Length: 392
Image (cartoon, rainbow, N blue to C red; front, side):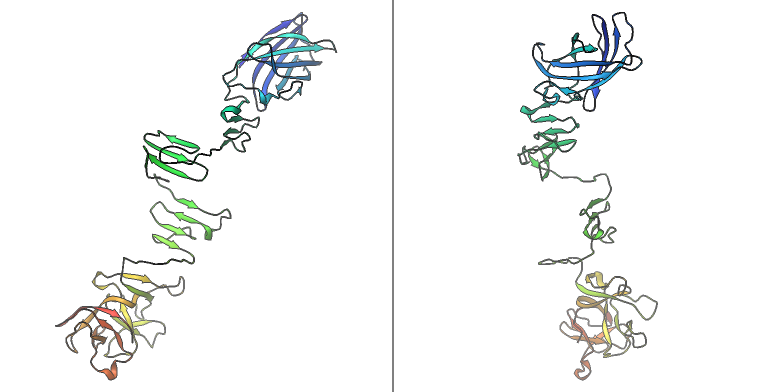
């Protein structure tokens, strides 16, 4: 803060210039010619901001102030009665030399010139604007680039669309290396004219995309472990959608059968590939098959031969517990040749061996007991047979 000393005739004014929220802060002590403080008295003061030659007035204002008991006056230049054509906002401070002239009068007399001194203010700290270069700094401390009436602390307007080589309203980084370009509705990561990866939360942390309402059903979450939730805050899978989905084509590459979870009547877990039937003693539950040509056959426990379920059907909180039972598609089944060698194309039904399938040869008993059609063969003993599940 710079102290300036002026004296003229019977008056002494010791001012201090600084920055204020809405102008230039001015503080001074008024003394008479003998150095005696003039306290508790009204004084009329005139401030003029002059250009480099000190001949032209860029801005001027007057104000009536009252000294306190110590002769102190305080004023924000820019808040007085404007006597010039221009406002303080119209003064260009960037790379310009400006001077302050102060005049003061007492008891209705004439103004006395107390002198002129250079104003040394940082244009980035004061109230400044340069419209020709599309830079504005308003009195409310908003900065505009390409916008004469900035509505935010930093308001940038650019008609240039960001491209791989240039453009946009903001460039972060070296244009010849890694950089980020932004325009009104686009963010582009670039590397010396080529597209680059755009990293969000590269060091960890969730990413949340949501509507203004904040309703979880409108939100999308990308968790830092790679799980994505749509309409759900805590996704339990790589993609967890809590709501309806629509797609032209859904390609599943992780499995080959359609399953539903079923609870078993027994507490134990059965081997994948086992044939299960409806348990009449426990409605809604399944158990291992244990007789040939059983019309209660329900499906095959999925997962044998490293063939995983491709589509799992369930309802959260109601039918979502138990082992996955293949109801359609391709799955391996535990089979036996007790009713003959199994060849591709043979119909399979339940066997007397618990949880096993066999070749169906009795057409009179086959209806309603068929598990599906064999796609591979079995010549001896027991083993896994690939079957196209088709209950009938």
